[in-house]
Length: 301
Image 1 (tube, rainbow, N blue to C red):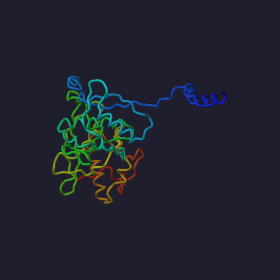
Image 2: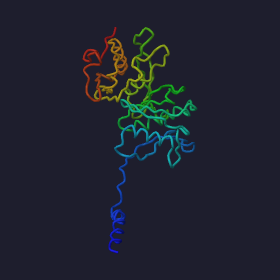
Image 3: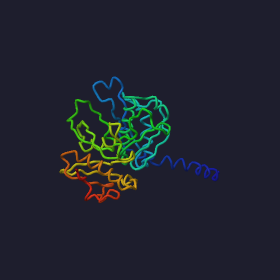
Image 4: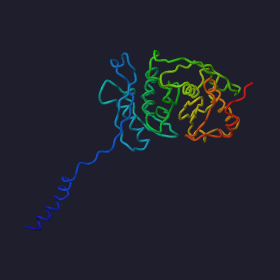
């Protein structure tokens, strides 16, 4: 009898220990904004794109965080009057390289066009650039560029969630691209500035977007990135990812034209007295093979 009781006690011991233990600690979570579309009723008189704070596990790898945010965006919020901008679209894969999220979606995204596609791109861009370590987003459909997309790479500053009534001012600048003779040519632009947006940021965005004139082309390669632009007492700080500098073409003349395209465009802003180029926060002394002490301002004439 004593032996049977001992066996019963040993059998129940794990259960008793489990009952005596405190509740399991929940995995730490953080909140991050995910941007959805307002439904027709909610959108009247307000922005078409609105955020919902979503729970995200802490300390997950950046690639996993990107995957979770995109999946939440595709599924749509669980409450409220917000909807997914990409209904019926599935996530095929995500990659993260050099502060850029590469998002590959199912072919259903090709059914979108015009404003619907633009809003979907903006929702993805705003949602993912809220993650620390993501500064731009590239979206493809089954590994291929989306046919009706005007551009392939989106930055947070590409997205303006304000109406025309919120434009603070319009400013004329000159943005420099390459012509058919491979020479730098200025393209006049009228930029609209909104609250919280600087003119230097707008010039960089226009430079990365590319020319409006079909006879011109970008001097900067498609995968060239800018982490941030900051103005302080007449000095414009342009922070570049180190990876963009490592990928510069080996040709010195091409490097020089890339640098001039960047600096001449920014120097079209009268308030900029000096430029400082940084690489992941550290000040640069050269841009590839071009010393910056003598080449930040290109001689005219």
